[in-house]
Image (cartoon, one colour):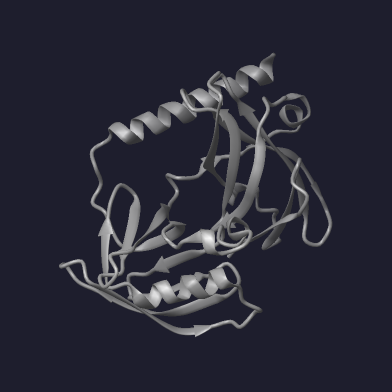
Length: 256
């Protein structure tokens, strides 16, 4: 009962945090930061495309250097922009892991865009010649919710039904794509750590996702949720392996 109450309070606070953030005074938007790819490239032309793009991201830095990941290859370069919303991205170098059609299209998009727009925590890159738009979501400390690292909660809390569709790590932030039945009210999501680390090299931590779904609508919803992994770092180690229940692959976190 205690831990169910703990989870409920956590979910209520998460919803309150979200509402408070929505009602706050709008912050001055900046082009700088880590941007996770959302949509724009026509994925229908690729087999299993949804499995290829989730890690794609772009980082724009204040010194006008950039870096990122195509979903298979790391890249770096420079960029220029101005107050008239013009932008040019210059890819200088890239790793050469066996590539995919998706990665090639992502790189082609970076080279083609010439304008940008900032809109509610999103960066929209625009190919002025074709009118195509590519949307990126800003990753920040505000995006990532805390993880509950509690052995007893891990052992006792149960979840409502959901599908864990994707698991990614972006800049010490755990990204989960969750599928669930709903469409009317939304859900509460918590990530629970088992607290006890396996002292392997690197150390390992068991985790699970707990969903509270009081939405009785029947549409199938796919939604991203983000959780901060910073406080889970094991002392003396710059890596951590997460073993997430109902996810077949280990998740490796690298701390800088």
